[in-house]
Every structure is written in structure tokens, then in C-alpha cells.
Image (spheres, rainbow, N blue to C red):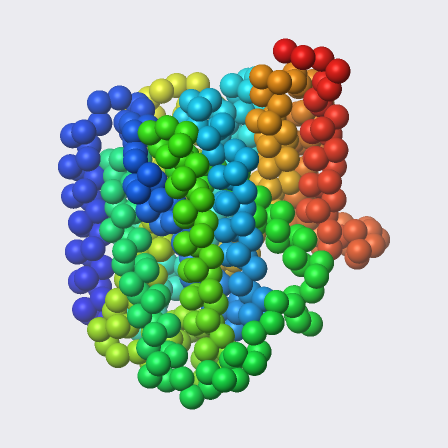
Length: 457
């Protein structure tokens, strides 16, 4: 697949450059560039929302997790789908009706400038790790398809992603997401069908081992992932960016609900692929290629190519969304400018920083994403949710509210990056293992304390 893949990859990415250039002609304002004109219909929002959610973690990462721990690996995506459905029920319409362009802009409108600034900083800093995680996944995919590692091709591919994102902005991302989603869904569906229909000798064994908890995934893990992963899907910057591009609150609410249901179906499909590999492939046979890459290696050539480009599409559709959102937040909410040129420059800077992190090999897909989410979720989810629900009903004590964001973020940072150092200080393991949850509990408590319950606006 090596030479063929290299040529096809180049043509595939050039297509997106062309789409970016064509979309650039439609850009008339900062709103067009940063939030796709805020006029996308329900179907467009559903497709770009799904494409955004289905990335490296939900394909390559999930199958490897399932291979290691079994069917409970489904909870990552299942909680994501639940978070999205809960967003539809409680937040989608209300958030869209407020009229914000970014998540920090939303925070600023309902809680003031300090809220906008602190949430902007958390997102921009932590999302570099999210982008790097997607690029690490792309590097692994390119290495597998070429049969060898090629830093040059990886860097060229990454720079093309950065370029088409900078050129076309959110309008380009929305259009390329639609193409990428179709390829993603075709690729994983064909893969599951091939494994279970043509290679299904162990299907009965797989069915017998479908379990929601086991010795490698305990009930306590449910609580952590529900809040950490579900929280990002409930009120994450990339997920909510799809809310902001919807034409109205009704479209945003419907899109979140339908996309959540479809994501549950996708969770079952990608988990079953991981289960087939778990019960048909030994660690020695798989080596270090990864669970989903092994599936590619045993599939017929045309289906293998389809799956590879499906995985590539999954990575691209998440990466470009993360880059444009983080860059827009930096320019609009930190620099306080509505400058298309400024966002384009920031896309290049943030994209390059994430690329350097990926090239230097600072972590794998799931560790980079989980690390970023473990900072964002305790610092932002509860304070912002409380602020949204209290909007125009109860005033906030902004000092206590900021303390809630800071406390949650600090505990997330400690648990993610300073666990070893804190353990060496003698802090009990039971506390170290739950720093993120402790941070979320403290954040929730302070958030509720910030609401002036006895006063009305």
C-alpha cells in the first residue's frame, strides 16, 4: 500500500486545499470565517458534529482500549453520547439563543470578562495536547500504510491540514467534515461486516464475553469517565462550536439529540471491531501495530484502503476543528479582536506547536487526550453549566465562580502532570487516584456557592 497510499494521501489532502480556496471566496466577514456564517441547517450540524466527535480516540484509541480491557472499553464513547444527549435536553437551545461565537464568549456574556479570559486560557493551553494527540494518531496511520516511518511525509501532511484550515476557516471545516464523515462511516461499517461475516468463527465466544464491567474496568471507573469524558461532550469547546454554527436553537437541539443516538450506534460498531481482534489475535501476532491497524492488515486490499482513509478522515475532521476553534478563541476572547488574519496566523502557530509536540513523541493518543480532558473538565464543566442555568435568573458572585474554575483546573493539572511528585510527598494513593473527581466536586461546590440564591435579577 506504500507508494499508492502516498500518492492517494497527497491527492486527498490537496482536495481539501482546493475546498479551502473555494470557500475563501465566500468569506465576507469574521462570522463567516469563525462560525460558518451561523446559518447551518440541522443536517449540516449533525454531520459536522459527528465528524468532530469521531476522531483518533474514538477509532484507533477505542479499539486498542477494547483489545486491552474488553467490552467495557465502550464506555468512553457511550458516555460521550450520553453527554451529547444531555446537552440537547438541558443546554443546546439555550446556549444557541444567547448568540455567542465561542465557549469563552458564552462565559463572558453570562459571567463577565474574567470568566471569558480564564476559560480561554484553559482551552487554548490544554487543546494543544488534544491536537497533538490527533497528529500522533495520523503519524501512526501513515507509518502503517507506508510500511515504514516517514517523518517528512507526516510533517507535509500536517502542514497541509494547517494550511487548508487557515485558508477556509470554519466554512471549509464544515464542508470537508461532510466528505470525511461519509468515508469514516463506510470504512468502519465495512470493516465490522468483513470481520464478523467472513471471519466470524469466534463470534459465539465474543458474544459470551460482552460485559459492562470486569477486573480491568471497575465501577469507580464509570464515575470518573462519566464526568471526564461525558463532560467534554456535554459542554466541550469543539462540540459546542457546532452549536454556534447552527441557524437557530431548534436546529442546535435537534442536531445534538440525533448525533448522540448515532454516536451510540457507532460506539457499538467500533467496540465490536475491538472485541473481534481481542478474541482472534494474540499479542504476538499483532505486535506493536495497534488493534485497528491489524484489522486493516488482514482485510482485502480495496476494503483496507477504504478503512485507512476512513481513519485518516476521522483524524482530519477532529484535528481541523480543534485547530480553528482554539485559534478563534485565542484571537476573539484573549486578544479581543475579530481579525481573520489574526486567526489564520494563530492557526499556523497552534498547529505548529502541536506538530512539534507530536514529532517529539510526548505521549500516545489516549494519554494526550485524557490529559487535556482531565484539566478542562474539572475546571470548566460545572462552573459554566451552573452559570448557563442561572443566566437571567440568579446573579453570580464572580469571585467565587472564578475560584471554582481555578480549583477544578488546579486539581486536574496536579492529577495529570504531577502525580508522581505528589505521591513522593506521601499523599495517599486513594486521593491521588481521584484527584480529578475531587477537583470536580470542589468546582461544583464553589459554583453552587457562587449563585446568589436569595436575589433575583
